[in-house]
Image (cartoon, rainbow, N blue to C red):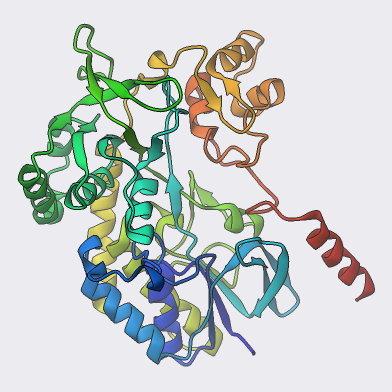
Length: 454
């Protein structure tokens, strides 16, 4: 089937972009690795689970219903279970290379005249002693279990780290009947107060979460952090300490909280692999775009968390603008995004920048990482090994990687890159990876053979 625009990622940004482009006469293919559209934010339980009230697990359910119904009524071709590992620029357009299904062994290709990247983001977790114990999960992972599987990660949970994601995770688990022993947030209220004007629009949402925490009697420990997880075969508890205004642990403030699950997250990072593979420029760690969400590669747009972590509402606005712009490019017309989307992007962009500044992880977190703490889980590289590399003269991530193998494993540094940079005392830098995910050698060999015959 001919395709004008391939949209990669079926979260809020990808859905909004697909609907906007399709409404303007563009033939759209929406590609996503999940079994259903929605992304992490609108993750749905499988139909076989018989969820009676799935809306109880979601924020802004009516927005999802409008997107879902609009997609069903549109001509958008939805390709789920397509795991895109590379987008290639070819004569006359682009080819998105994907692997099919849960096994990710069979290849598929989607040809289009233009590409819109709505690849989202992924969680950042900074290491601490005991973080590899069974029972320690990411905050987003705990939320995904609840939304997608209708299961809870444990009976007594501590939610910790920093960032706005912790609030819906803690309240969602509490509403599901889990005993949330504490919500441990390293940011103090004074940091949020500094950005009060930019965050004014977030106050009703924050107040709603605060009310739910009170209703479920969840203790909220601001300017605190978990410094150690305890247990032998699995998690049995954590040590929580207070932080001073500089982000250092206050001695004598530690206390033990028994729990069987720790849900931890230190913010989000954008997925930029596909954009980098196409040669798109970056702005720091995000994909750089202009006011129409265009990258600096002609025919390529980006929207949502890939261009900066900002939440679902901002992703919807950016996706709409990007979809309108891509459709105009393909049809040779002028883009005409809804004025409300333009205003929302400006307003929500200011809030996102303020949240990023307010919710930065504690500046001195590496001081609490003991030498025997595993930093790179794929290659089992410890913090002590990284520090040894620094003694040998390493001063950046790449040199540490060469000396220790940190970042050479299955995740290719996605999980440990920030931690290694923090221990090395340097700024984290995006790694240039040729593929966005592991690819079977047979698929690569088959593709090379086909190219040789053409």
